Length: 120
Image (cartoon, rainbow, N blue to C red; front, side, top):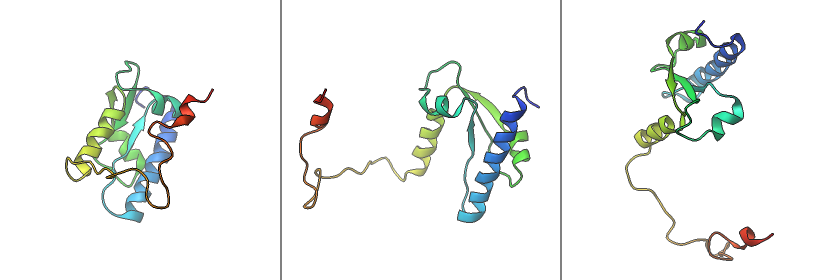
């Protein structure tokens, strides 16, 4: 036990088990990262939150208990870690952008951000 409540560890083991199943189903190599915050706080907490932390491991073994045993707790939000992962897997530095908004079937109605933001 690493100081986390038992139910947190059980939930992590279940989630890591699902991630390992995805490896088998989809092939390739996945990376499992577990936020140590609640399910809403994990998404809403911005980078720089001093209370945020997450767990990750360099490997995603088939047995989730093995993942838990090798995972380390990292301080801070998982968002910067995710952005780093995306950078490594996004295939270059250029971001694809549409040449113009809309198309023949869907013409832009108004310039961004749209008139709906002005409605009261």
